[in-house]
Image (cartoon, rainbow, N blue to C red; front, side, top):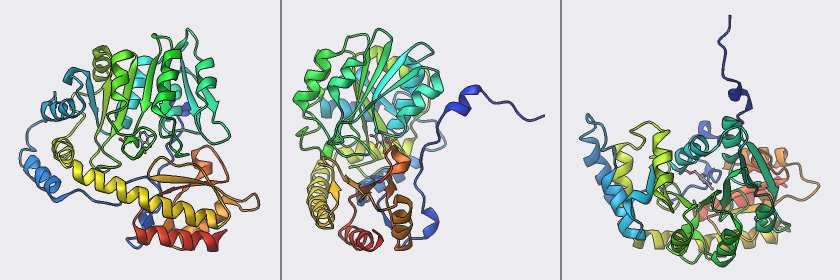
Length: 360
Ligand SMILES: Cc1ncc(COP(=O)(O)O)c(C=O)c1O
């Protein structure tokens, strides 16, 4: 007799993980929207100090990180949830809010993990197509909200299409959402967003909307993707309590916690990375457009390219891979005929453009 699995296991889509880890080190890794910059030396040192105490379980209330985030954003510590990456918090949201009969509304294509939430919980997923500029259609999303809606996911800037809405537009949308529906504003890339202005801007919205949660990560601009740290700034302490109750008690390890606290103290480095990344992105966008390809209006550290009608996405991906360039295929992200490309080092970006010109 074979093992029997829960029915939901068959429903849950597999996360489209990046490939190419087998290709060695001479590869342009432009597939996961990570930072090309490693952690600053002080972060290494903080991690080393932290692991000296690795025989003890971590502080389950994660006080230093919670306090550092509270100081930075002016949000009380009890309104801050932490997670083993922001994905950890996202999955906990699904568990805490969704069940059969409930509805979750989100734009599509958006972050690949969103479909997991409905599949795992038995809730109904309502996927709202992006507009012609590959942006969230906020009016269409608002029109889908009903008494059954428990959760609305807004990815701003949107992964995979890189587009965003201004803070004013998001604020106007929030006015349309009834207070029983929780809105997760997934701001994994907010530090890069010129539409948002700065990562403090949306925090103000929490005071007006107790049903709002800002979901953020240390995996992108802070360069800590492998350590796994995410956080949520919540409009209501009940949200944080709910996502903590459904998870294991020690969901953030000591190294991750120490690294995040230290990384937060280096905002000058964050600013430098943002400036460098945005300058490199402009160059990358220009060169790709010069190849005659359509590129979405990016507000993040990655770009979204539509391939020409006659190009076969799988063939282009193989061509790029053969030239040592890894990007993400649109088909794996919900839209065939497109590529999502992370802004990397100058050398990686150049390698990508050369490879793309040959591969299409
Ligand atoms: C929009 C968005 N949200 C959340 C995440 C999850 O990030 P992490 O779990 O590394 O914090 C990602 C990762 O790519 C993302 O693009």
